[in-house]
Image 1 (tube, one colour):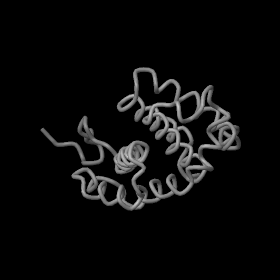
Image 2 (cartoon, helix red, strand yellow; image 1 turned 135 degrees about the horizontal axis):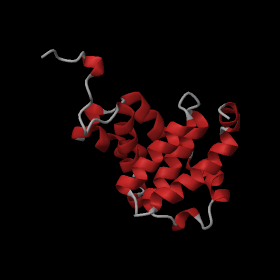
Image 3 (cartoon, helix red, strand yellow; image 1 turned 90 degrees about the vertical axis):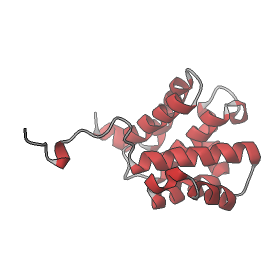
Length: 156
């Protein structure tokens, strides 16, 4: 029996891309920030010391964590019009996912909006409440229409 070439072999069931791991770590850091209001440097240092960090895309991780925490006020102002309640009433997980994903939609134009929304939905399914992913999806769809309208229109 011949073995399939490496490119054709199926990835292990628990395989996560480096960017997915980075997003999970940033989500963990934002959650910690929500609960403790710790500094960006302390949060980054703690996350870098985790076992999971070696599987992350270090540059992507740092850009996301720093970018979100440096722009929280702007991100909150961007998100709030698309909510039916104040941001501070959201669960810390949904709040963190929306901050993270909104930052990506605005500043990472090389990442397709659908990939950003899909990653956010997966984070919400794994870490959020039972229907939190539906809420996150609805808000991000509206944000994508505003911030990625040209990209969306070109796919129709």
